[in-house]
Length: 97
Image (tube, rainbow, N blue to C red; front, side, top):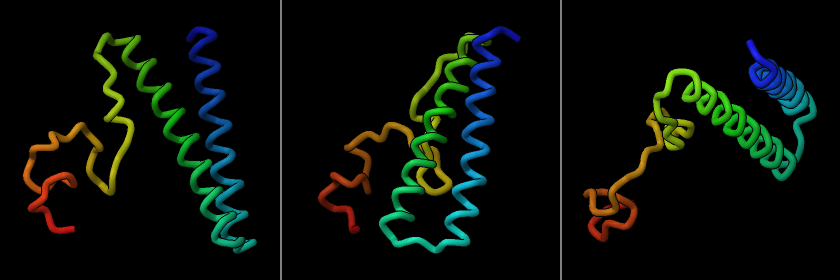
């Protein structure tokens, strides 16, 4: 393991620690919706960032290309590029939302 990997895993450990702290805070303090939303947004941003860094490093190691869309999910479905001409896409005038 090189310095870059140690730093990456240390960053993952920091995010993991922060998740625990913020989760306990949100469960016990029952903050306002604004505070709750800000905490969720910050955690989401940190998780996406560390996930992208892990995926990029994996791509460095095995040569498989990194697809940024693979780092995000919407519900249980991977968030991938969607052809706007696909029936049911949000820009499809016939879609019912």
